[in-house]
Length: 360
Ligand SMILES: Cc1cc2nc3c(=O)[nH]c(=O)nc-3n(C[C@H](O)[C@H](O)[C@H](O)COP(=O)(O)O)c2cc1C
Ligand SMILES: CCCCCCC(=O)C(=O)O
Image 1 (cartoon, protein in one colour):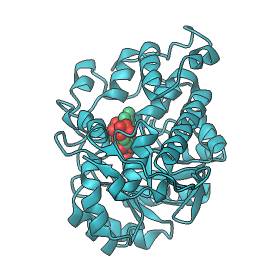
Image 2: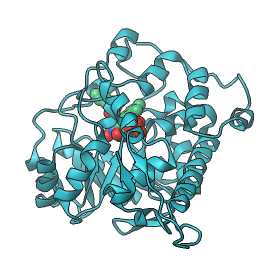
Image 3: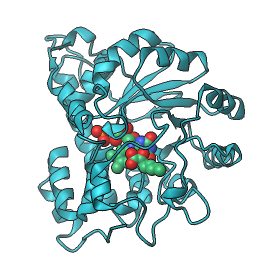
Image 4: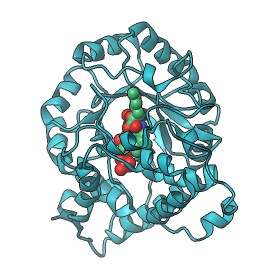
């Protein structure tokens, strides 16, 4: 196992933010500030990282066509997802181990989400308990890897309910862990001393988490009977699975390939979105993650059938650069970019951008 503390001595956090105007700047600054092993954990994907590259490239391969002279006025970015209001259709994707990026970890992320009015999907493998993240006042959903020990899984569900989480996000693309070769080279397979998977009980070792190939639709049926919280399935790429998700009572679907960290050479999430949107036909909300770096990316995803997107690595870069202030700045940059894109597209709201405005 490798690891060390985040280097906070290079510059004050406000100085660190001075030169940052987009997500790329955050990534470059985070790369400078993070321990290299931890940077690799955040940045890496499975094997040849073909899917990591594909996710961003898919946005680059699509062009936007503006409509003109519609006079829609200033764009309204607010949205409602599963009955819950959010200030924009951009969520924080669940990512594990925020303490590797910043000492206040998921509490800093939660405070930034609360300030920005965006929904944060906390990872089951957070380094702060779901109760402590909820105490930040963030609009919170909890991501779950269903553990074969259903009594344990149910206890987490009850904790999420008691903490006021608005939904459960069940990750379904992980019947095993993807083969991460940067992690193998760095011998990074558990958290450094002093950090733990805070929701997991015991010592909170990563090795005690089970990613089970036996998890099936029966487990979703069980979860559906166990809680009245909305349930989203995260990691759906096949249109047949999207239909099954709806039949089994899922309240939402996140089209995702886990940021290219599970099965390498899957298509970009964006490339699967139109097919899945057609299969679901508006019966449940669709979200998308993977490679969203710009306001124009958000606009493309919404035009192709998503109600909202989630961002993973950009939040980790911003957290590593300046903690809560960094994530606040990131969310404000994305909000500004989205507002600008929607206006230039001739729309009054992100949802008003239409499919014909996105072309190869
Ligand atoms: C460092 C890291 C840790 C992640 N941890 C989780 C996790 O614990 N649970 C999960 O469902 N997805 C996890 N993901 C996947 C994200 O939720 C999301 O699908 C992905 O990051 C989106 O792609 P992007 O990073 O290009 O925005 C993780 C991603 C990264 C980069
Ligand atoms: C054995 C569980 C490790 C999961 C790590 C968290 C995750 O999903 C990731 O992409 O990293």
